[in-house]
Amino acid sequence: LKSKGINEKVKWDGYPHVLKSQQFDKKWVEDVLFPLANKIEKLFGRKKLRKLLKGKTMASVFASESTRTRASHEIGFTHLGGKVAFSSQNANLSGAMGKGESFKDTLKVFDSYNLDLIVARNDSLKETPIIDIAKGLNTPIINAGDGAGKDKQHPTQALLDLYTIYKHLGKIKGLNIAMIGDLKNGRTVRSLCYLLAKWNINHIYFVAPKALKIGKDILAYLKSKDIKFSEHRNLKTIASKIDVFYQTRTQTNLGSRKDTRLNNLEDITIIDKEILKLGKKTSIIMHPLPCLDEIVRSEVDNDPRAIYINNSNNLPSQLKCGLIIRIALMLLIIAPHKSVKLLG
Ligand code: NCD
Image (tube, rainbow, N blue to C red; front, side, top):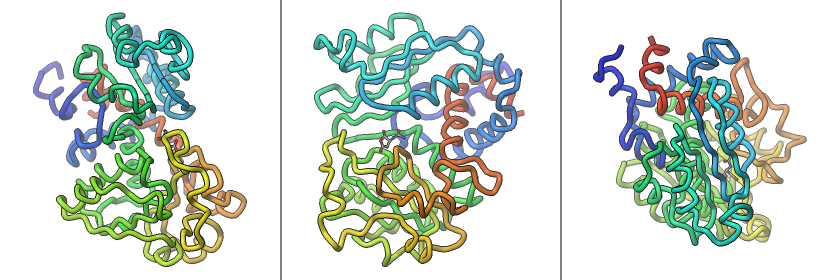
């Protein structure tokens, strides 16, 4: 187990940083991440888990809003026995960034404090993207949502989304996936597309209001990987074909206008009881959250296909899958040899 060779198997391109979906390949996801996550799910809350990162420290530096992403990393880290040494919400307003310091300099500070992990988020286009800042850091860093620049990504969300699909549908190959809502500024959809392109999925249906269409760069990428896709404005016309409905919020914090979804009668992108009626009984409805009015909650939440918040069929919700996947990732980053041991 101490052998370097075995530890190498659990590592990915660009290890130990988690910066973008392109770093991860199918084999690693299926042979390392998913089995480790399944194991962690079984051990959840047990003493064995709480010993794994004893004495390890992390800082989470979020220069923009977050609940789930920040909390699941921090709480996940403590489930592994580690200590959250620093945690900042809206670091852009408080501390030195509030005085005008760059995000890059702020992360450099944490890099020199001898931590085991930095988890970072930034939404501002004025800041250097986390992907670039990481090049100058020695501490492992997780990109927990980078809204800066063209290559917006949220790789841990993509990994947890893929895990959720795999848990609930038992496969990824051959699926019809609908990406719905703000496809222009949403980083979760971008990262998920980059990841899904590695599987032999059947088709991606992009459903967005005219003003929030998916970027040409993503379409070009999918084309280069021979992934079939099409663009739509009305969810009703394709709902019966879909295995995974991936709904998203209008990204007002990343520059989208609030009214874009509702100002044209052709732009039908809301999930309600009508979509449920049209949809397959075997489909699943996902949402990275926070969920606003793009799902009619009173009509959809209690349907067993709605898995964004509620567990369903004795399987963990997307929300819970997020905690599990992030625990697995942090363990792989800080203690690869212990991950190998857990994998058995
Ligand atoms: C997403 C994000 O921040 O990009 N949230 C999240 O991390 N779960 C999606 C969103 O904010 O709409």
